[in-house]
Length: 108
Figure 1 (tube, one colour):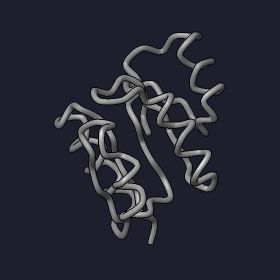
Figure 2 (cartoon, one colour; figure 1 turned 90 degrees about the vertical axis):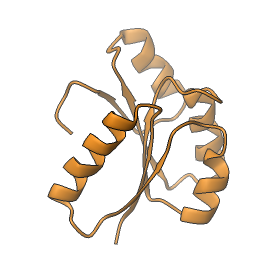
Figure 3 (spheres, one colour; figure 1 turned 60 degrees about the vertical axis):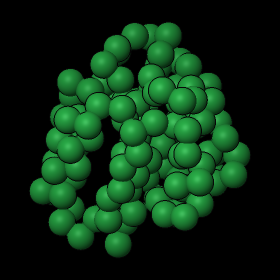
Figure 4 (cartoon, helix red, strand yellow; figure 1 turned 180 degrees about the horizontal axis):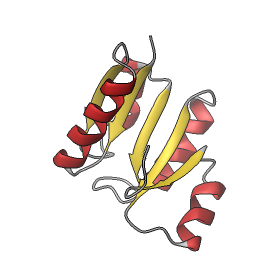
């Protein structure tokens, strides 16, 4: 079973993504976090294999969180999500060692 964590402050988006993932992968275990404040603790306890994370989070910068996660858990796949599909965001995500960069308007 694949454990997945969705980190986004928009509850509607989290629920929509969760429903979309469940429709494709019904056995996936999914948990949610609304911000970056307790994200590292959540990763310690939940042990996800995939993290979908909004690039703009309250509490802590998602790109800095990505660096920390990759340092301590290099096997976790991090997918940065954003409403702003800008080249500088893509570059920043790459430099933070995110595995993927996905605009929120695209189909996941």
